[in-house]
Image 1 (spheres, helix red, strand yellow):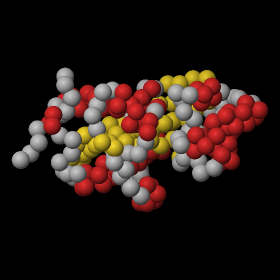
Image 2 (cartoon, one colour; image 1 turned 120 degrees about the vertical axis):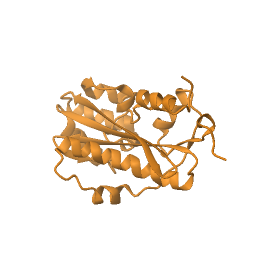
Image 3 (cartoon, helix red, strand yellow; image 1 turned 45 degrees about the vertical axis):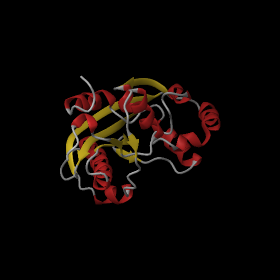
Image 4 (spheres, one colour; image 1 turned 90 degrees about the vertical axis):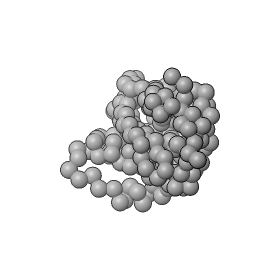
Length: 208
């Protein structure tokens, strides 16, 4: 027998502790399942067509979110699965999470004194199909901080800078890197929470 919407299990297709905390703080009951999707393969196989660079990055973020959600939906077809991903672009170049402190330093030097864009993709899937899609962008401008400040920041942040694509946690000392932020706070953290909650209400999963 099919579950009713309010009884349907909610799954976050992500191992991200930040996304889990956002959902938990919003009062949602859910299970977190790592999709184990091959992100590198998805990126390599992505065809942007004739999309403009920023639109192509939006589409890639959505594609990653979709593949994560569908991978988990295949294992839990009766559940409602949340898929989310985020890509950073700066001056038309896309960035992945740094693999070392040295790479994080090099990236932050490239971001310094310039705006970059966080492209977020968010989907809901069930029974192997995508039910809903949402894209969001936030533009963040780093101040022209000194090399001495950068070195202090990296020493204090340590390996945490490798946990986010931008090498910062906005909810922590990373906020000191910035002079201007334009966009939704939750989208910056990697989960556009307000549109998601609105859709979950529309789906009857949470109360209206």
